[in-house]
Amino acid sequence: MLNRSAVVVGHEPAFYGWLKSSGIDERTLAERREITDRVVYLIPACHFPEEAEEVVQDIFEEIFRRELAAWQPDEKAWPDTSDFDLFTRWFTVDALAVVDDAGRGRIEEEEKP
Image (spheres, rainbow, N blue to C red):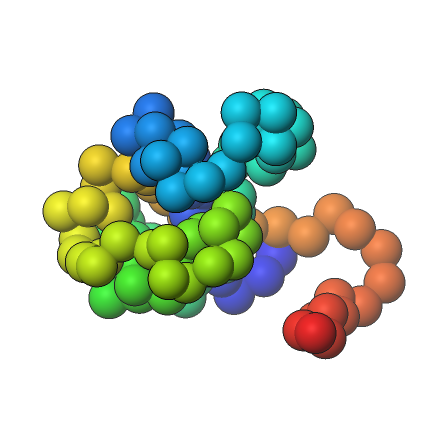
């Protein structure tokens, strides 16, 4: 078992609407949705839902940036604001208290380009 919890971030229709308005074409959007409609982020271990909510409130800007960059790499197209209210309108967040690793071998971090 890992000493982490996780949050699963899903994308709301409002987020997809923004993507279309930011220049992402319908075909690319449909292809990407099939691959990555939800993303799992590891967070510090939390034993209660309230703890996970607090962690998400502390790190939502990082998640927001990662989601925007994954879908729309042109930062000039990003919204002027990335407050928690917009985050909660664009994304759903489900907390998972226990994260267990059923894989084999060491967990290795990918190098970022």
